[in-house]
Length: 197
Image (cartoon, rainbow, N blue to C red; front, side):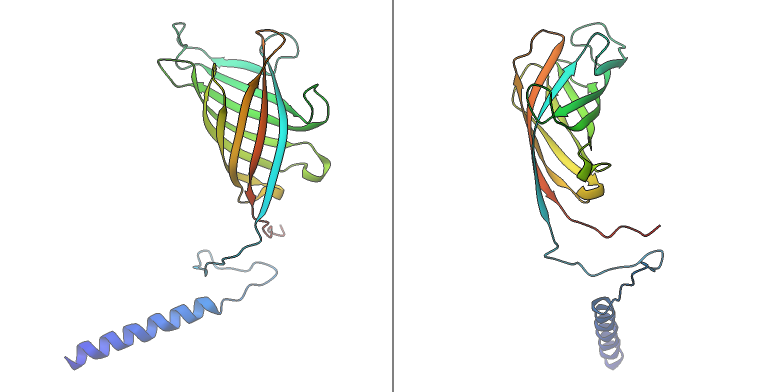
């Protein structure tokens, strides 16, 4: 019994010391850390909110097309397995002025019953203050319905650790070879110290 009591006491002491070690973890400017390290959770991080209101103009044919078919293994409705690659500008105005970013995506026709697409995308910003920063997202798009909703699941550059939502509604288009969508993108990111290499 005494041996068991001594064992439990030593276990509690070693656990307390380990917790205190985590509390007293020191960080250096050069980020000198071991290969693997348990760090204390830092709450109340400096989270910031972002918001964008942009217009998406997708063109399917002609010299200015923004979307191309990468694979089309099935000619039957609804083209199950078709893969599209897109590089579509996101404009600050409906008339196609003030380039904000580029919406670059892979869309897969993943629904066997209707025009249901799985989208994986990143938004690469062109604004000087955000140049090189991206938001990363994914979701499901039904070609003939509105509204659309995608999850923002990450980001790079300014938008490190980004999370959020992207809401879209289809607008009338001049012809059937073009798709116009109005998007509102909202979410949060946490600024991070980048490695100095």
